[in-house]
Length: 258
Image 1 (cartoon, rainbow, N blue to C red):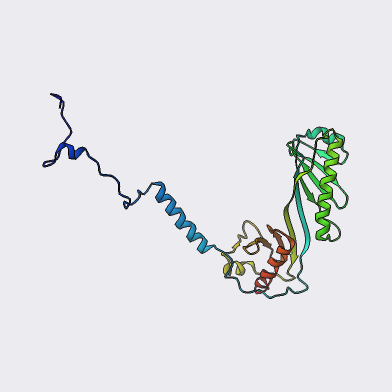
Image 2 (image 1 turned 45 degrees about the vertical axis):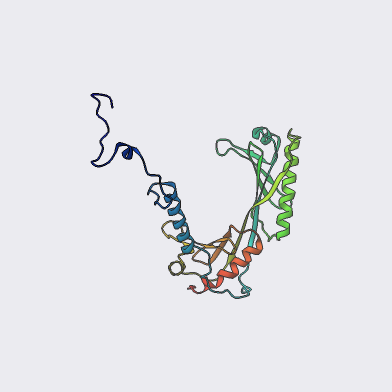
């Protein structure tokens, strides 16, 4: 110790060497409340509780094997997307094509309308991303016609862009981006009563939206139902999944028909 400088306080009966030594932390010590281990443990518990509460749809009753003939899937449609692998001048393309529109004040996209094999609107972005949106047809379109028509439209859009001065444009990474379908239950539905029973699977607020949103886990599908019995199906992977989703849910809505 230096004269005139006080040393550290030492309890009575303890030596200075024992006071400066620290105990090594034990593996059995509990983690502090704000540590990463405690946060991860709490998150895992909340996740397990959430899965137990909102897990699957095993609580739904067994559905009949067949759907009544008056309830069927209609209005099948799908959107597609692909890349041209080149940057585009949308104003130049809009001036070169007579069936194209471009208004940068409204949207930073160029819209190209295609009439064959059915009406499709192609949305072109500056980076070469293209999305195809089929419009409503006057007559029903089969599934195979939808897929073949979207592929044909993608090749047609690629050729149009090549003719506008982009010979390096190629149709790459083509994929079906979104499936949609509609159906009709042919009877009104009491949405408030349905939501009161199946609120674990539903979202419904009549002050915000007039439709009831019903989410199905197997197969993954989202159904939007109106009080008049109109059903819109989205979020499924294929049209077979849409038929299976309708088969599993039509009798649930039939229980609450007016």
